[in-house]
Length: 82
Figure (spheres, one colour):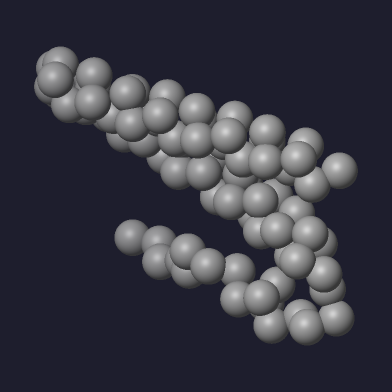
């Protein structure tokens, strides 16, 4: 199982960046991070489908969709930084 950090503290530690610049970097990071998670959920839903775990498939697919919908909010937030 892969372990990864959920915060990009390197951005937060860069005091030379403005709040807007830090937010832009964080939003980009969070979008990629969520894309990675959504892809993992889809991979596991396929595995669950092969085991006829219908409800698990439905829930994992829903989790993937919700994760991607969060990314749409992050993309809107990025537009607000311009």
